[in-house]
Image 1 (cartoon, helix red, strand yellow):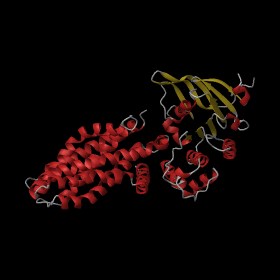
Image 2 (image 1 turned 90 degrees about the vertical axis):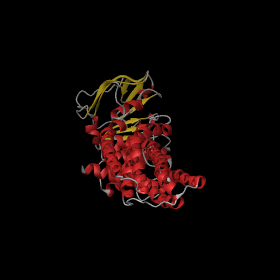
Image 3 (image 1 turned 120 degrees about the vertical axis):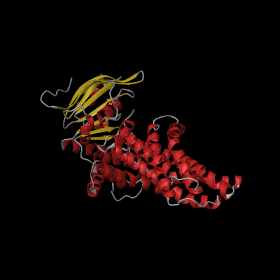
Image 4 (image 1 turned 30 degrees about the horizontal axis):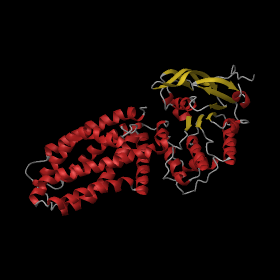
Length: 224
Length: 228
């Protein structure tokens, strides 16, 4: 267990250092997320309309932005075939997966932290339900996106058009998570109904898919 | 004819009927060989002879289509990966990080937390561990040496080196050859895939000639390997 933790920590710190120097993922994600802010000028929704559509808009923006980050994170490992150095080492595959997933989680959370105030201002948003639940939904929803995204990005690593392959694999499997996240966000913003069912669904989704990804990642990493 | 015999020594690596197919192309076509420890083997041959595929198979990166590799007494190569160091043709390094940062990361993969050991390994290959420049800005020779340092960081018994002299100037290549001799004298078993076999003329214990996915000849002298 300590081997997994040590290697995961080393890999995560390496990824954060590389991202800090290149800013590849954050810059590309920011571009996507800003597009949604531009929508607010096109539609000019009222506060009531905003509360109803914001959940969908925000999470679709984050999903697309996350896909960009997910492609970047594995692209680094392809340059100079660095992944082979990992494969010949005794380091557990799970440790690399966890480091990548946590790294992507941090990147997307940073993006969400920057973008949320902009969404609030431009869409004139105010939660009518328990606002603290937005933090839980945000954490669970982001993890749901990145855990599968990290896995499928690794899976599509050796395919020719991996930028296209990733969304093709990721989007269908993310539908339950996206639905739960959007419904929970809308429930909290409008205050019309409780978000608890969707939060529990999201948590269960995360447990199932995190476990599956951890179990299968060794096969994906060592596939030829 | 100066053929090699290993009657007395116990083999550290035994390859039996190794076949590797990529689609319809057979990169290895039934390689069988034994290699003893503490020797420096130069694997030579034309492009497409199967040298790199053989090395990747020994490193456990390529799964054989058929046949077995026994290393240090086991066919489970994963279980002996701590005893194997692999240097590929690409550097296997992060261009955006300094040499020491790279080595520190790869050391952690082997459970090595000691920064002094990383610094000592960098010094051993003739580089300065305090260099803060990212590896991407190194010369090709420096990059090759750093790549060798990465392969050596965990002090493996077996070193698999793919084209360590490619794009390296003559002086750096001589330094690397000297280092490889030292490592061999210290008991390491070293496999060097190279097109510049003359670099190893006075260092290699054996030249292993490969042609069309097969080992066709094993000789002690380079001339024997080059001229049929």
